[in-house]
Image: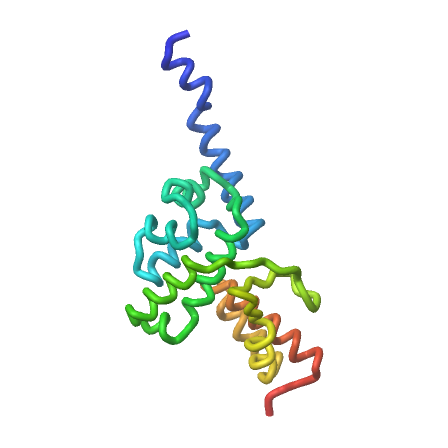
Length: 187
């Protein structure tokens, strides 16, 4: 067997690689709600950084991030990396970052890069793991504030945001559920 034949035998055929990538992307969709490439590309655009810079903030090597984005790898192995990604997605929604303020963007990236995030257990029937920075709990401030709105309005807003902003849509659904449980509605 020649060295070229040995290389193909070891590596597999291009079709095998395409099937593996398709399987990995499907697993990412199942595990993370959408392919990681889509999530990462939105962060690269929102924070106006390169993939290599984003990888540093997340705590990954640039090649590993590239493999996750392309589907050559399916899973983020380090829970802190996933937590930082979620934290970045949340920061995109803050007025300072959303407005494109370079100082706010730089500060957000530095804070998240230097963070020591934790993952907690779901509370109150939630399906998602709460992510916190130094003990911060989003459930305690943001959800009660949103729960003051009519549940129907929150659900309608979630439907509008589903395709482009699934994490924000889920937050609105959780707030609608909390408002329904307490019987609150906006007048």
